Length: 326
Image (cartoon, rainbow, N blue to C red; front, side, top):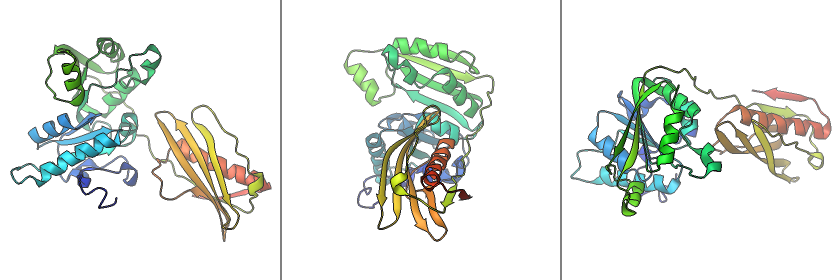
């Protein structure tokens, strides 16, 4: 990261999960062994920072997709760190930019989280968009698998139809639950928004784990490097694959002077869609087909398939057998 670009945020508290061994060793990152809590979709960080400051004996991880919200939260952490009046330095907070399903499947061990919070998740109110809601039955089971025995989940929503849907989804997901109508108490951006529009009651669902559901960590798949004797760029043809996973060609670029091609693919599989650049470059061992350097790509089965498909297309362009090197 550029020092100039990120001088106003607390980079220490931000984890680039692509660059770390998965699942993440959270005790190592926090440099303390402590109960681990997770907030899904922390927004501008109001609740995350408040809870972490009130509970310095616990470790807090926040995940969010929107970079501007992450940046504003990290800037708040920086202010806390630099305040001479503060005895709290936010060392018990780590922030990631990652989808919740990916995080739970790959970054957290089973039976590792003590508490999970999700305040005002997007309710996706349109009938055709319900499938995008986060706490589906399968996701509730995934959360269950990552919680310790007797761990808890707190979900708060402003939208009653969403609340009713949530109660249906948690059935047979290994939880008992309590439901409450509560007054504003979290001071988050969305809570303030609904409050300004006259809404003074919100819907809270607290889940208590009563039965463990075993869902193992999704492990990284080795991304094979292929070497092929010959390659004819003019005859390169890539056959898209639809399904799960889907592998779709977006672009193919070739530099005859450098004997180098770049293939841009979109790889979509369960819970994750990635843009993957694959390089085809001439080397002493033949034409090398591999993931291009400098990408933030998770080594999933779909990514491994995409590289294999490009290698097959290279081989077929010159009708050559393949050699591979793991």
